[in-house]
Amino acid sequence: MNVADVMTPREDLVTVSLPGTREDALAYLQEQEFSSVAVVKESNDGEEADSENGSESEQFRGLVTRESLIARPDEDQLAILAEEPPAIASGATIEELADLMVESGTRRVPVVDKVLLGIVTVTDVIRAMAEGDLAGDTAVGDLVRDQIHTLYRGTPLPVAERQLAHAGVPYGVVLDDDAEMCGVLTEVDILAVARIVEGETDTGEAVANQDDEWMWEGIKAVGNRYMPTRNVEIPAEPVGDFMSSDTITLTRTKTATEAAQRMIGSGIEQIPLVSGGELAGIIRDIDVLGALR
Image 1 (cartoon, rainbow, N blue to C red):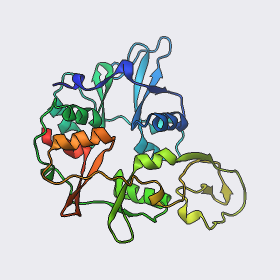
Image 2 (image 1 turned 90 degrees about the horizontal axis):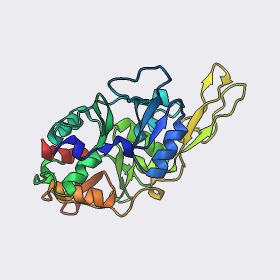
Image 3 (image 1 turned 120 degrees about the vertical axis):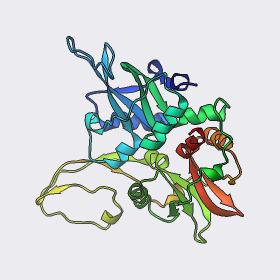
């Protein structure tokens, strides 16, 4: 099986165009519940398209991901938010793709043969494994991450977002007052309730208010003058109000194929592992690709 067999072809991609703003991408990601959107720029008359990433009518300028929107809340321009991940040819094998994704840590890879042909994601590969098109006999116990990021269910959501960002993970296993697992919070859950707000213009000294410690980003100050800025506002209610409480779990003896089927069937990207009723690890979709290496 090759990359071309699992990718989303160019004609099926929904894109956002330059010039554009973060709102264009955020609206798409929230409404479609996708993890990224391709950014393109229409070629001007007489302008030669990019021979590596473009087409006769457009140039591929990168991807805007939910991670980049969360990590850069003050940046408004798509041209700056767009990132160019490593690319792959349509004829490359799925094993080569798995190596690229695992080694580079990228979840989405543009498929390029002189022009942009499509996008292939970790989810595309997981779906192929879930459908039995790829080998997945490896036990998840051989692929699991022993280090687990946890959150307390009473933590305000903006604080939990910062904890995930600083830890560099897209999820947190949520613990209750008895330190028992009671749910999972993901960056998708956070993005679903994030709202862009407009900073206000004012002059004078910066005065903190009682809510500042829970604010994800406050109004930026230069000298003693506030500057208008765009921010992402996250509700200050506790994690328990936004987490998924119906948590799916696996044991270490389940196979990568079974993990892939659970992920695709439930629309999730990570599954906690339990042993003897206790939390014992977590397997993420990109870890499942280890079965192909």
